[in-house]
Image (cartoon, rainbow over all chains, first blue to last red; front, side, top):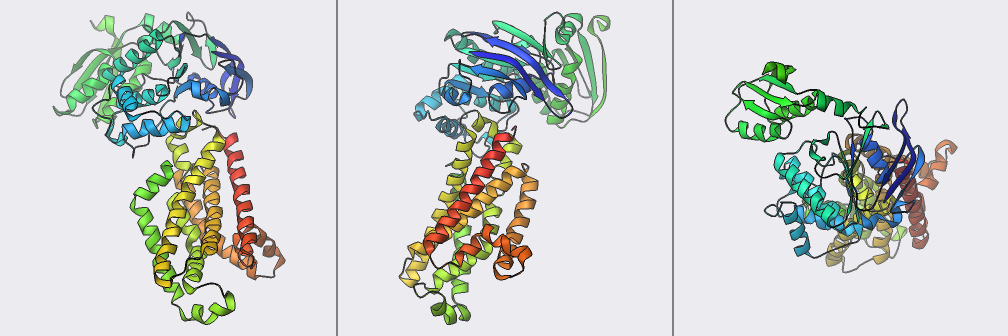
Length: 293
Length: 224
């Protein structure tokens, strides 16, 4: 399905990916795991035609050019805004029209139900939460029933409910014999669904044993404590929803929140959650969870 | 079609039609238009001359006001990634161009129909000439929107361009100074002086194609 040979992308002073050779076979649910800035998205953007490689070649569905396979692949790019003026239904219909695979409205409604947005198909996308937007992005990727689905960070920065929905969608695609390529910054949400995994670090593929993310995961549990401004009762459920996707053993009080995380790489996501809830942070402390208990 | 729908469903379409209609009606009532009408072109009525003058002077401004960020907005918000993964980059450029052309076709035709109600004449060839002029403006908007891929930059450059381009073009057409005279061949204003409407239409379409090819080449080279 996907074959890359020596795929390299260089920016002025940085090598984003360096001679990546990768094979994804039919029926694989393939996870490319790596920390932020490791080159996952650069690799993803190249194989989906969003950017161009500096050197190296790739084939998708045995074709050297994406031109002839576009109708057979579905793509969910990372951190992409949606057309906020359109409703969920209009969004799917518009993007399907571009692919050249227009369907009936009832098909789109079914699809939105499949990703858990059946109550929101007439809502303007601008009012959607990040998780709902990701689910809608997922729906547009599979609307034309592609053979090969490519998903960039499908689990990043979304609520637990959306993670479950997306996992369920991928499981269904797996059962249908579809091929899925996805990227993630940690294997927590991909372990249960991926049939194959590769690890990337600093633009190069690395073995699982030398992968820094893996080391952190097996080596430590960190209890991170956040001292913050007073949180109103109506904010707490929202913050809880965000933080439950990042860590475990969550304790939220009025001016202090703590939770167990697996790696320091998760701290930015937590800070983002506080920012989204408009809660001022005063201090962050972290200690080994074993020692603290 | 999304571009067309978004522009047409909003108040922008009504405002555009009203602005063009009021300005052209006002211009057509100016005494010097009536005095020189026969001298300029016998087959024209004053409303059509008014339309041409308004579009020549404010057409670029209106186009850039509505569409300076036609590509830069999508690149900035990264929604372009959805499109790039679904179709070719050339198709995206052509789709955007056709969407905007359809919007302007609707506005110009509505204005001409309103004029027709007053003058009882519908000058199809004049409407076509205006549309090809607008076609050049839309291509310029697409080109600059690709060249400056953030909405702020494309707005600043677009507005500046829409003010300066008509002025520089008219100076280049009227001046005999060699330093600026060559510029006239790159502007639709020069070809408007030719009495043959078909030549004007063809030259404007050629300028449109050149600008669209330039935009497509820039897009091909860009990571989005």
